[in-house]
Length: 261
Image (cartoon, rainbow, N blue to C red; front, side, top):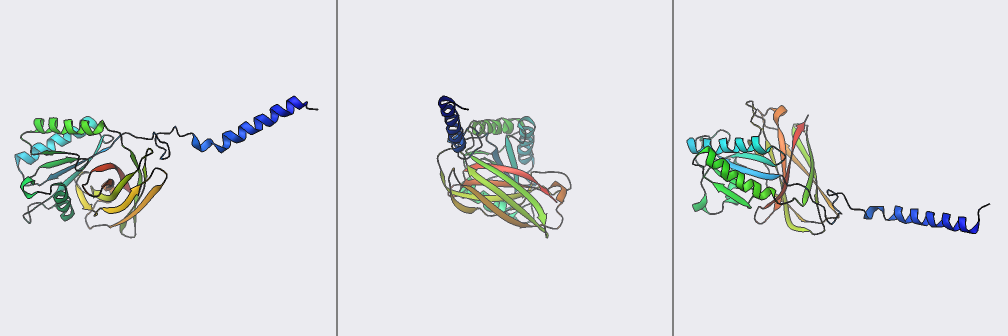
């Protein structure tokens, strides 16, 4: 038979266990838990290069510099979007009208529009022109490292698959940390699909869509549909989900996922 002291200890243990169980959701040590007030993750920088195949040596210097940047840093550090743009018709068969619109949003003044033009996290950083590949690389590296020094406070979990002749893209987006961000917009770029294996070329870019504010206790889910174009090699297609500030295209975070069949 249990003594009064033994019963008291047993009741205390039960109470403590019950307390631990009920407060378990308060242990917010996971840095990717949106409800953790200290939540953060390593930044993946969005690098957008606006180019044209008819640009000659200066365009080649820019693309060579970016290729070296990719070799040195890898896909965990940044995602490259190679936007082909043309103001004169028939100067680039890879040109996408939506990419030109994106460029006008980032380079708003006509007097400041000249390619090659490379943006790091949207409006955060910019490198225009390229005298030679080495100089371009060093300039790109400086801006990339500057952006990588900042932790991302938004996380994205995305997936993409083919269904009924369309790309179906879904993504869960959450704000990390205790604060909120306002005026948030999301966009999706389709890249790759080329026989030469170049996976960075933008084939389609959906217009940014406002989703309002991101709070740490709410996960926003987006769903996008993109018609598959004739000639796209599905085996090399990928999508990039972009979360940015709507008024000035400052990119909060981005994520790339392959397209599953």
